Image (cartoon, rainbow, N blue to C red; front, side, top):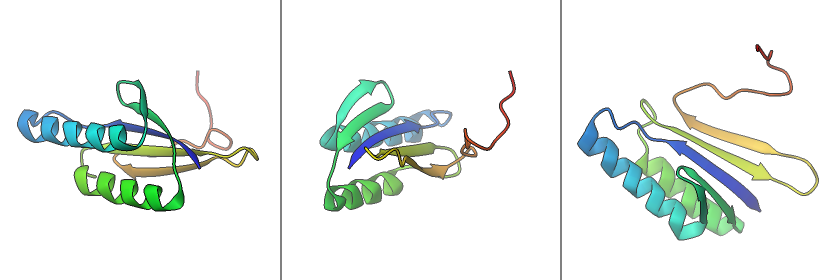
Length: 98
């Protein structure tokens, strides 16, 4: 499966936030390629995805951080998994305000 993993780790608490940020980036680097500062692309099997997901969920603070995973399928069935703060936006049904 092809994934795009994005994250936003709060560094308000500088020491703990910086530590979480490094660990999340390191986990993503172990499985994929960094395409932007907090965006990684990766091609994973189910076993690798289960391992990475567990590792990421262990590292983030869901009260402060945000983690989004976009599953890109060749059949146009894109799935989004969201953990942490912020509500995921459904671009097909939520209103778009400009």
